[in-house]
Length: 152
Image (cartoon, rainbow, N blue to C red; front, side, top):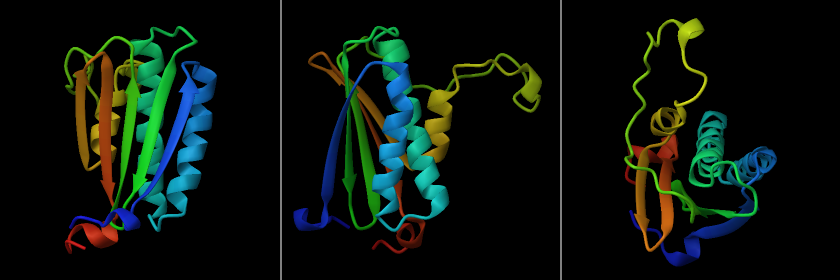
């Protein structure tokens, strides 16, 4: 169901590409999504996904170099939240799940990094990535579980 524009609340956040800012973005996202009638699990999924996406922009797109903007836009619809993370750093070559080199059932042998995209895909209902005109954009959507199956 398409929401009328009056039903959509949009919030824009911008942060410098510093790892110490990533947790602050997560807290802001948690606070914003908490007011939109999502379950605690759904709020956690959105927060973790945005933190992973912003962290990826800082570490990979900007290679850990501060002084660059990472933009976060949250659009709260009656049935979902859409999160758009964008940057002007190096684009991802492909949007694909990381295949661990070790047995994923054995947590002691898992690599420390490289699972962010897999976490995002598992936590969110839709994930789309593209790069155009020097801007990388990841759009993630989470539907409210109480509305997702009823087409509300």
